[in-house]
Image 1 (cartoon, rainbow, N blue to C red):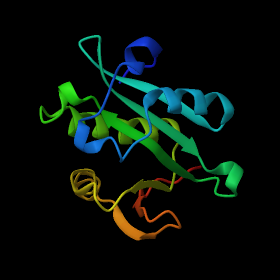
Image 2: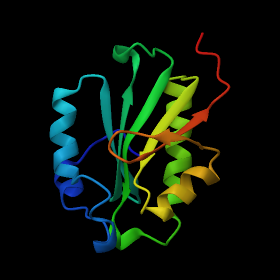
Image 3: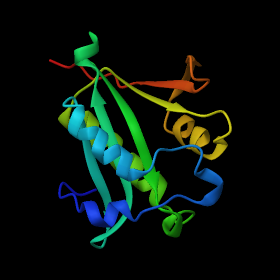
Length: 147
């Protein structure tokens, strides 16, 4: 992961055709971040090449000061099935734990996105019901004291 965001590189990142219905385009997410001050976006890089995208939001404004939601996590189609997803997700969780110190981390996934669901469950996320949009909510208890 990289704190520097090269929007042009990230705008050209696209998911596999089979996954297009599961995620918003990065351009939408980047624009959304300008109107959502509690969110942050980061590019996922390998050897200075953009391979993915991450968007995270603190839920403090929603009355949940010790909770974080991963709004977007994507690895570009050209970089999938090469280990980038697992490594990047692991680093994302570490980054969130160190810098945001939440007691829990939330993420949603469409029921059809079996690969993403398996990835999240593999990192310890537990199913936490289905939302009004039909997405599976998952939660990870971090066991981090936010103090």
